[in-house]
Image 1 (cartoon, rainbow, N blue to C red):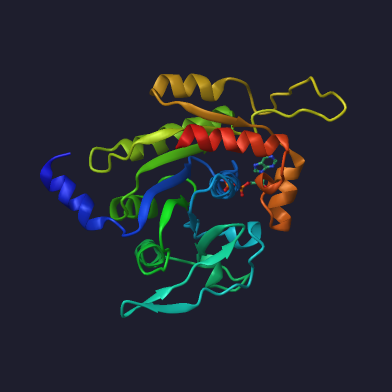
Image 2: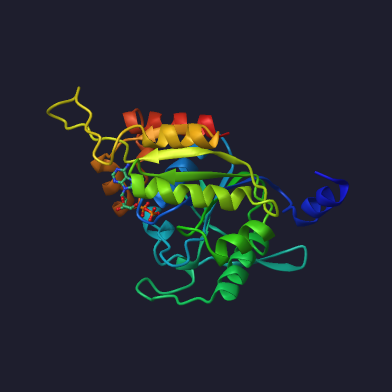
Length: 266
Ligand code: ADP
């Protein structure tokens, strides 16, 4: 980057936060939030200081996935500034619009309001020292994405997709957004979620329910790596619902899979 660009980047930098990684998806329902949650606890277990910002303002799921529904970030004064103190569980510091609205309340945000709220959660929060701040973006590409990625010094983006053709088609748009000249955020890779299913009674069989190899071809075509393949596992879904991410399980195969993805990402 030119000197001017470098200064701009520096001006935006958030003190104490080393890396900001955006977790994005072309479509909703592909498991983006689940991947973000599991990567956050995995990085924490690897010894990093981790924050997770739930920017999925239309369907915040971090409070549920981390068993923190009803938690309220308190206000703390640091160096004369009133800052929000993130909620913490499983070694991950979190902020989510879900902590500020009622559990069953629909939040209707206009683009500028939403991006203002998100900016505050990033800049007016007592994150402290973080190695990684993961941002769980809303699905798709839109105003909110653009304002976040223009305002926040994002280090890199990962894109989550199922192997399904129609999901992958939208991945192209997501990647194109990060690669726009004015944005220019490195895409660290593609994470394939719901890659295959292995029934317990047939442990050697893999069923490619949403298609096979699609992510590999697309990633090759776009010149980005595939960071990992996460199978469809009932405990991943159950863990999300009970509020304890699957990657918290010691010694489980899925825990190792998330660890591989995290290692490939960083
Ligand atoms: P998104 O953030 O892309 O909208 P979610 O993370 O909310 O998607 O996931 C959608 C649903 O799929 C949730 O019910 C979640 O528990 C489930 N899910 C996600 N990944 C997996 C997986 N690998 N195996 C089983 N269920 C999964």
